[in-house]
Amino acid sequence: MMDEIERQLSAHLGDEAARAPGASADVTAGVRSRVRRRRTVRAAATSVGAVAAVGVLGVAAWGLTGTAAPEPAGPASHSPTPEATASSEAAASATASSGPSVAPSLANGDLPALADMPEVDDALDPTLVPDYPEAYVMEDWIWDEVGPGWGIGVVAALYYPPTYEYEGQLPPAVLYLHSPEGVYFEVAQLPAGWWDDTRVVSWDEAGGGVRLWSRDGGARYDLRTGELEEVEFSIGGEPAEAETFIAADADGNELWEARNDNGGGYYRWSADEGWAKASTWEDAPSAMGPSQWPGVTSSALDATGSRVLLTTSSADQPDGLLPDEVVVYDVSDDTTVVYPVTQDDAIGEVYSPWWVDDSTIAFDGYLHENPASLVASLEAPLSFAEDAGLTPPETDALPVAVDVYYGEATPAATTAQECGC
Image (tube, helix red, strand yellow):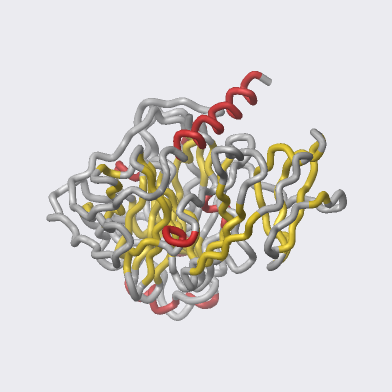
């Protein structure tokens, strides 16, 4: 019980810290060498599938000034860093016949040799070691087979505070590509700075890259060159302390949130425009992700994976109570719709929103101090009412294993995190 209370308090403290001050601060562009913010590692193993190539780490930064159009800064000089371990160094004794079952769609070519399993420190707690799949070495011809049904993801240690604490070496994070039939190809090991809770959150099929996100920030990984360009926002002349992936639609348009003590807000990436301030800066400048409880956060996405629920709260209506407004942001067309909320003193704390259908939303919460599912149609003003027959969707327990699939929106579960306080 005490652990649960501590988790709840930590979640609320984290929410309060992220929300101050407001999101009107200037955002300036700049390029800087970034020292990744390291934390005491508390990790549990998780497996996810993915794709990429090896190379050195490059650093890039993007930022905006006021409400003007974005001018992304070019990547800094690619100073040498520890290179990723190429998966082409497969064991000489490996044979295709000893590997995973061969998918019919891959039978038009000889499968490569099996890749070596990643090397893991013998002193590492075995419970921290991910379940690496048996996989083949990636070769160029496999790209000709890639299409709908193929998945991308990372096998890495997942930051999971309630369970483990380990201050030593983490196991390697490995990028994999897998076919619809479940044939895995190891493309590369990520640099050591990306071994902590890293996920693939967007696949730019046309541009040949994926976006990675860890608790420390985000980066674009070039699938052809293996180069990493790290996402770094500057707010009020200071680097963002939190860069959080929110959503990516089926076309690869992305929504991120960036914050520091100067404020923050939401940013959109698209193939046509690159990085730009999302329309929330104009239409809902104080929009924030709704509270989750207890301590688990994830994006509240609709069935298309493109519309996300946000909320606003005033000083008179603090976060955790019924919000002043519900904000629906569509990452596909960069539109923001704001729904004022009719206040009801009988409604207490609300949290963990979800979509009932494309025009109805719901929150967990309290009505007359009793737990309740609170439902509202997307109409202005928005009015919540109890629906005793509504069953909230089950929340995947962490750790979760989530792939991003070719031509599909990123699943909301990709954004799930346990409070790291």
